[in-house]
Amino acid sequence: MDEERRNLKGNEDELVYYRTVDTGSLERRLKLIKNHENEEVEAKVYYYPEQNRIKFTENEVRKFSLDSYGESIPYIDGELTIFNNYLFDFWGYYLNAEGLALYGHLKRYAYGKKDWCFPNFELISLKMDKSRPTLLNYMELLEHYGFAFKLNVVNKSRHGVEESPIFKLRKKVPLLTEKLIYGNPDLEIPADAPKHIQKALKKEQKGLPVRLRKEHEKYVKSMIDSSEKVHIEKDIDFEEIYKQWEHFGEIIERAKKAKSKPTSLVNREKEMDEAEKMLLNLLKSYVSNKISKPSFDTWFRDILLKKDQKSVIILAPNEFTKDWLENKYNDILKEALKTFDEELTEINIQVI
Image (cartoon, rainbow, N blue to C red; front, side, top):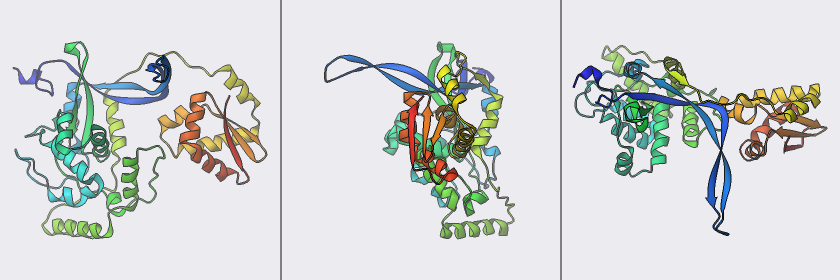
């Protein structure tokens, strides 16, 4: 078989590699559920994040290399799965034992010069004795720190069937950045970030524990004493790197109807006075710095506000948004409004 015609999985099928990105909107779906009390089938409404796909060519995926970012420590990678002690001594603090183990399982399939693999996650789950959702959490950690990058795969030669994903892997172990070594107290932790990511970000705020930090300084000094060139990056934002790389892909937008504000929303917006509009703008500005943009666009973009002396009413565009604000973001709303008006004693959320 002509090597140039093979895809990353080693055959001649036409594969499409893609990543998904949230549009910031929700998609309404109906699901039929059997009520076990009366044995009747009921329709329940669910809201899922609406997503677009960004697809990439075979050539772009091959060219993308995580090893291009950061300063890697020198070592030789052969047929064995080799890890430098630096990975365990210092990266282990951020990746945890499970993250290191998952990286090892992925890397063993990226042998030779390959920097990609497509392993069986069910098999890895059994080997690690961890559930698939747990493995996906640690996969997110590996992506966050630039050790692995997941790409979904569709096989066009087989009628668009979804195949197992491809993982681009870092082959060399990078040095920690200054902010990971010494901490970044100014780092903000999104309130809606998953718990395992919040835990990692809290570590990043403080940096390495003092003892590990001293050991790291000894390690760097030994490299310098051995005439190694050492360059420690101040910071590397892999989320931003991934976003930049996505510009090389072609975005496939979901077909959807143009949205306009409901008449009720427009009318209530006109009823707001200048003080209420100012307070609403301050509220939105405060919240937008605390949560991700897709979350803000989904839950806060269309809210309105009415103020009555020491109480505030948050007006949500629908019942679902009202429930979500009450259950997930009530504390942020109180925190934000108290920041701008200490006399507020009551906050209610209602549907417009």
